[in-house]
Structure formats: C-alpha cells, structure tokens
Length: 269
Length: 279
Image 1 (cartoon, chains in turn green, yellow):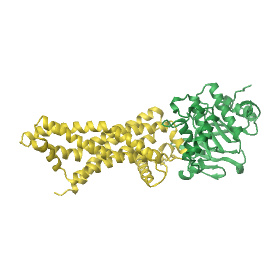
Image 2 (tube, rainbow over the protein chains, first blue to last red; image 1 turned 60 degrees about the vertical axis):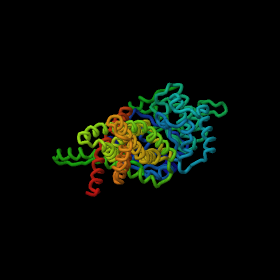
Image 3 (tube, each protein chain N blue to C red; image 1 turned 135 degrees about the vertical axis):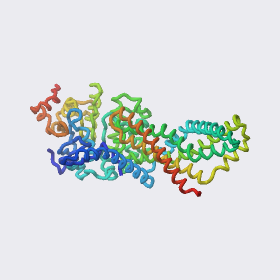
Image 4 (cartoon, rainbow over the protein chains, first blue to last red; image 1 turned 120 degrees about the vertical axis):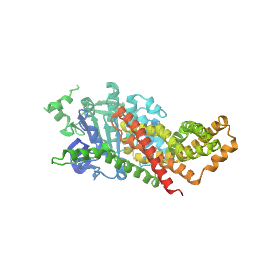
C-alpha cells in the first residue's frame, strides 16, 4: 500500500452496495502522485464502481475516500463539483453527449465546471489542442454517431484531459476495440502520462494494456513509444467479486500463484 | 441536491427474525411503491428548487418548448378538432329531439374548455413527450451520459429536468387553449353543415356559455398536468437500468403512469371546482 499522506487518491475500507448486491467490499489502497495504477478484474468484479466511488458518483456505504488529501466520502453534490473539476474521467463506451458535436463535447468541462468556466474563445483553443493531442483535429464539427468506436474513445480522452486535471480515471478504454485501435488508445494514455506527468487509474481486463504502460515510454522526439521499464510508477491491482485481492508491481503480479490472477497475466515479449 | 436514483442507494433492508413472514412480505410489497413516491417527490422538489438557483439553461428551455409545444401542435389540433366535431354531432342529435339544436355550441364549449380539451391535450402530449423524455433520459442513463454530466460539473436535474418542466408548464396550457378553439371550430363545422346552425347563433352561444371559472378550470388543469407529464417522464428516464430493454420499459411506464395520473387528477380538480362553484 502506498503512503497515505502524499497520496492523490486513497480508499480506506470502502464498501459500496446496490440494494442487495455488494459491489465493493472493504477496499483499501492509495495512489501516489504521478503513479499509474492498472486495475485488472473480470466483468462485474467492481472495477468501474471503484472509479465511480472515487468520483463520488455512487454512494459509499462504509469506509472513507480521500482525494488530494481531503476526505470526499459522500460529500454533497455541490461540493463534489469542485473536487471533480480536478479529476478527468473517460467512461466506458465513451459517454459522449449524442446531441453535441465533438468540439462541444470536449469544451463541455471548460464551459460548465463551476471552478473553471473558461471564456468561449479560450475554450476553443484548448479544445483544438486536446483534439489534436488525440489526433482528432479534423472532427470538431462531427457528432459522436459519425465516429468509429476507437475515435469516440479518443474524443472521450480529449474531454477528460482538456482541463489538464492532475488525476485521470480511464474506465475500460480498450474494451471492445480491435488490437490495433486498443494499442493506439493505450499509446495515448502513455503519452498523456509522460507529457503531463498525470496520476492515472486504468481499469482494464487486458493484461497487455498494463504491460504496455509498465514497459514503454513516450518519446516526444519521434512521437512513438519506446521500451522503458516504468516499475516505480506503475502498479497493479486485481479485483475479484468486489474485493481487492492483489496489489503490487508487475514482477509481483507475474509471480502470483492465485489461479484467478494468473488467468489475467499473459507474458508479452 | 441530486436526485437519489434507487440504483445508487445503499441497501435498505427491513430485518426481522421472528415468524411474521406474511407481515414482512406485506412490508416488502409496499416498500417499492413508497420508495418510488419518495423518489418522485425528491425529484419534484429538486426540480422546483432549481428554479431559484443558477445556472439557468434557457437554451434548453426554448429547445424543449419547441419540441414539446410546437412539435405537439399538429396532433393536439387534430384531437381538438375531431373531439369538438364528434361532440357537436352527438349533442346536436340529442338536442334536436328537444328543439334545442341552437344550444349545441354552448354544450361543446363548456365540455371542451372544462374537461375534454385539457384531458385530451394532456393525454396526447403525454403519449408523445412523456415517452420521449423517458426514452431520451433513459438512453443517456444507460450509456453513462448522466454520470458523465455529473462528473463534468453539471447537475442533471438542473440541466435536463428543470428545463423540461418549465417548457411543459409553459406550452401545455397554450396547446390546450389552441385545442379548445380548434375544437369549437370543429363543432361549428358540424353545426353549420349538418344541423344548419347560423354562425352568429353558434358562436354567440359558445362564447356566452363560458364563465371565468370555466376558463380558470381549463387553464389550471393543463398547468397541473404539465408537471405530471414532464416529471413522470424524467423520473422513469433517470431510474432506467438494464440497457435498451430498460429504456423500452421506462418509456412504457412513463406513458401509462402519466396517463392514469391525468385521469385521477382530472377528477380531483373537477371536484374542487364543482365544490367551489355557487349552487
């Protein structure tokens, strides 16, 4: 477990229940500044709920959540807006607003976050920059329905990073994508990590996503990924039926003997 | 204050270790409807409270006024015209037996303005818009757009519910007045061509038959119904779960609930006006 005092995000025995289903059972962990945390687990293991609990989007039945050192457990919605303005989240299936263009979607947090409220002309420049970062500069006036699944994910990442938040949450960014597009998305996540030194939580069920984050860095000169071990800044967690059953680095993960964990670990040379 | 969606609520369980299985079953049976009523009032309270809080999404209000008001004009006008025409046919035939065909306009206007205009217009708007609101918000819910909105600093009730409530409250009374007038015109067409009523005779009896209390009743009803239509649609939309199947279910529930509530409220509002009117 990381040091709680300098953690960006910390969970202390967090339990989340939906009617009769317990989605998270006493989960505790801490994420340090500039760390990338890869969260592995099967469908329904509580990975997405964990991100939503961090954002205050679901009620916590017991335990405590700390963001940037302050407790945010079940804060009133109005107070959570301020906290959320410092967190970017890319949702599973993108969650772009259907009725808005890509430019309007990406501009949304700049124009609507109460603590940001950029002027439209300032927002326009930032939107263009964010969309160019994800190589979607030509899609400003398109609607989400006009883009492919991979492009929508990239637009969702642009919306998450446009305010330059210190913490980014990626909910299954590669789910349902072909391997090439999934690699492109992960490359963008690594690029964002290395360019802005952002702290990130990446939920995925693909070990190769975590492997890529842990072993590659973005070369700003060539604009490509190159091999570079990131063992200090990349840690893994494994969720099973709402419980956190593993926390450690890649070597510890690969050495684990639990059959559930070994199912996720595939050696990629 | 966010609307508490049941899906996100911490579990509430009534635990009892005794042998009162039937009592527990009864409590469980009522728990669902009581929770639903509580959530609906919570949504209603939050939506009304937002009227006095910034930001106000006026663009969304005008967009919804266009969708709900202008978009429903054709069907409510058709409904108004033919309900007025049918009423004139029936009443004209009945009144003919007493030599009172001249009173056709009077009967048509009173029934239209007091009862049928508000109820039928509201039912048409409920069928078209309560379902539309539920399916739109339901789709947003199951695709996490509602969560995204909250994550991006916007209260979904302020952005989605309050504008729909304001727009429906503004447009439904207007649509009802238009439907009433077109219904009277439908009655006139029947009276003129079938019962050979003179225009002056029809319109003067139509106009004179109406009292201020009739007009008030004809405006209070659609105003009350507007909250039912918009909030029931929003309520079922925001609590949608279960993917596209859930969206379909929410849409059906919104139309059925709002339609039944319109009939129930028609009875109670009419009762209040009957009780208030001088003998």
